Figure 1: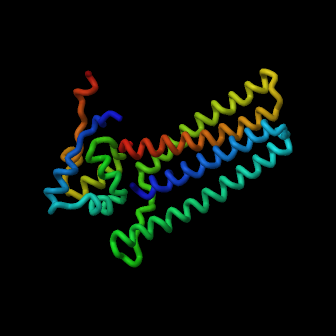
Figure 2: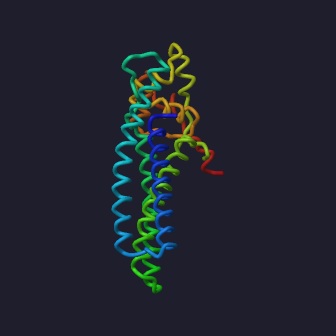
Figure 3: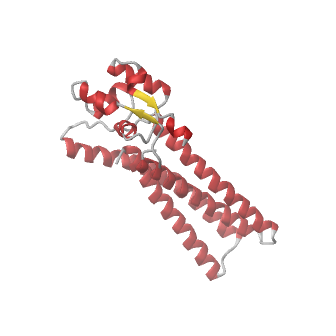
Length: 151
Length: 75
């Protein structure tokens, strides 16, 4: 597994966990009667902050763990990690971004439709962040699939 | 995913060039080893620039490294 694949796998796990956390919190809110705009916007803040922190920490940890594994495998003191992006990596990243944008656009459309069909704005905002996270997960899955298949 | 219509002799040329490893070729042309593997399996067609760089490493004309499967177009 290349460094890029490891990085994407870590991102996939992180965003899946954040998505699960978001869904559980929304479910708890709806069950407990606390599904209010204040709580939803607070949850938005938590989710966005989590996504930023987890992405940065995940990338740093992937570098460190890859270096340790490489050092154990080769016995080198200063292991070289193949972390640069070549043309194939860039193309795969573009395809993944395309999948993310497509999923996200469909999500925004669905969220807007709920508003059009008489649902409160709270539902629209909840769906917006849900589809944002889901789009990231779909993008990561498509990137991994492309790496596994060759291109 | 279906194989590319661009065929190549990279594996053969590597062995003819004192059994050059995929890693050595990757370093010489500035890509990762995974990209060389994907090209050898004909799952990835390189850019024109990378194709020329590979031909330069083996010191052969481009058409000796890559060929286009024109018959697949008529199928």
